Image (cartoon, rainbow, N blue to C red; front, side, top):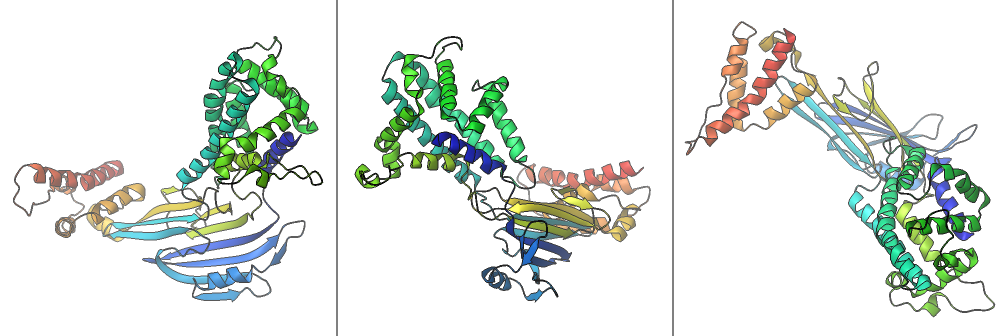
Length: 462
């Protein structure tokens, strides 16, 4: 019965929508030239019919106070407000990292905001730990089945499924569970996880959609007997036994859940997996024989492995709420936030998690044309949005001499009949003695970027 309860616990953990007791943060970012103003409002909230607001912990207030130059308590509330002016790097107030960067040119500017909030930004390490837990689970099961079935022909037919297919499939399910932790809805949430995992298992023959009533009954009734019966049939099928044929005698040990659990409990502490997790420990020390005491739980470490493989992300840690609002004078050409054209803001809203969870990421890029300069040279604004961003990045990548040559050329451009011809004729002058054609060719390619951007924009405007 323990295994069914454990599966139910894991399933319920995925469906949890969040906790009712959490901290709330509102972040407002206002660019000011090369710098930006940042205001963080925080409070502790207990949800319900009438949400209750309290102050965040004194420790958090003290930590935030070290990062910001100003602090105040909103009148009549317990909400704390921290504010300050920063340049470049964003303060690590919520356990992340980020930056606001502005690149300028005479034709306009490019602004880039990106910020990671909490979470673990090393997915390769996270997945490596989860996959290692899956490997240990599978190695343990293979050893247990071999102990029960011996080196019979039935075990040899079943071994490829256990050692290869099941290992691969559990790792993919572990990945799906991890993807469900992605903030901002990118992971699809619990419903998407259940649908995706279910479809994956159906495609690989673990069960059929029409088997759902039987599976739900196992879940609802906490029926270990029915669960093991389904497991027996699945394993028989993987051994090549049709569903209308009897279960092979070699799988009879799964017919009695108590016997199966006892057998696994006796084998687990003797396994190589267990010894690696408890190096140097003696079985009698970990599982002392005491007739007067409770029966030691020999499968606890197996359940811990399952949690590491599929749900290792501080299940019951607080899920704080954060809202980020970025003042943006121009509509971003690239962002994962919501653009409000009336308020001229980009906003994000998500729950914040610690440790193994995928970080919340906010980003926005926008460009601001220099209207006066573009009208002077082209008669109207022709570069904006992503095209202007490409131009600005190209310009900022020029050497000092190259920038001087381009600025000199641009200063002479006028919106007359020779505008296109002048742009097409521009070439950078080489300041070094070339030993081959490569330097001149490179400079020619370098000039193509603004030529193509400007000429294409002029053609669109006509």
